[in-house]
Every structure is written in structure tokens, then in C-alpha cells.
Length: 215
Image 1: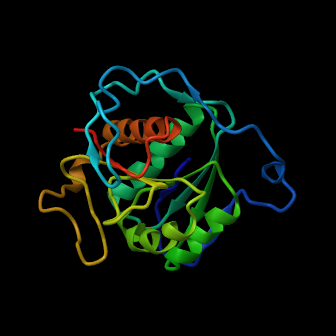
Image 2: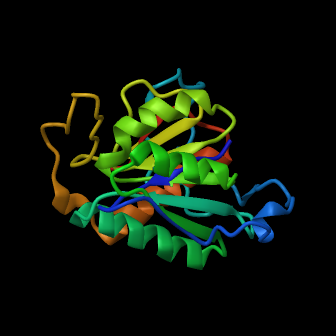
């Protein structure tokens, strides 16, 4: 499976790069993992659903998506962590030859996620606290689509939702709010891209439905 990274900003839902009849309407090869995760990435036994997994730092560095991976970035919120995550996704997509499109969800978070789903991407990436509750509503009904949440998580993820957190991040929504150690300053460009790459490696490897901890 593959996942979505969701981020948002104010205003009505806006969609970029999604015109009827364009190349995304055509079939393309299923995305694959290029390279292999290193020692310490996978736990010794298969993790249980919703488990927290702490891969060894750098164990995902040699993993890349196959060329042409189709990713939709859903965005909501104009806070500094969200902007940093958006930049990290854009930088990663350029470096990895990823076909990236962006949905700005505005105030309609569920609608923005649904727009992303209608584009039928390989991966939907979600980062940004504003979208967590909407993801918890939408993701259980779309088990065929993988979602990747960076810097946050949903309280009860289904098998298609993978999250990446660290000390300073782990907003869970649905009234649970942010962890007591939440620190917006920890959302640095380097940490954000590192977390994204670890999450993508996990999804491409088929280890989904868990929370990766990347301190």
C-alpha cells in the first residue's frame, strides 16, 4: 500500500495539477521499492496493528521509490510546522523524480482528502494537525489507499495509515490534542525530510498501520 501526506491552509478547497484527461488518467506500473532497508529498520517480529516502531537511524537511507511515483500532498493550515513539511515534501519529490500534485483543503478538510482520493495517487501524504480528525473519518472507508502522516497520528489507525513521529510531535486529534512535549521548533527541514523518507520506506516495504518513531 501507499500513503497520503496532508497539510492545509485557509480558504476554500483548491486543487492544482488535476485536469481531466491528463497523464494520471492513464495506467502506470505499480510503484516499487528501489534498494533495501538496512539492519534495524524492521522489528524482529511483525509489529501488531497500531504499534510504535523505532527504526535505527539511517536504516532507510538506501531506499527510494521507483521513478514516477504519484503522490498527492494535501495541505491545510499556515503554521510554521506545516510550511516546513510542505517544503520537505516538495524537495523530496524533486530529488526522487516523484510526480507530485497538491490539494489545498481550506476549511473543508474532508473534502480536500476526498479530492486527493479521486486523483487515484499511489501515495497520499498528510502532515499538519488540522487534517488529523478528517483523516480519522475518511481513511477507514478507503483501505485500498495508503496514507502517510508526518508529525502527527490518528488515535486508531487502520492498516492503510502509517504515521511518523518524534519527540516534539505526535498530535492525535479527536480531543486528544498534542502530546505534552509538543514543540513546533522540532519541525526542522532536516527532521521533516528524514521522517518523510522513513515513512515512505516503511510504506513501500509493506509495513503499514504503525507509528514510526524517528528520534
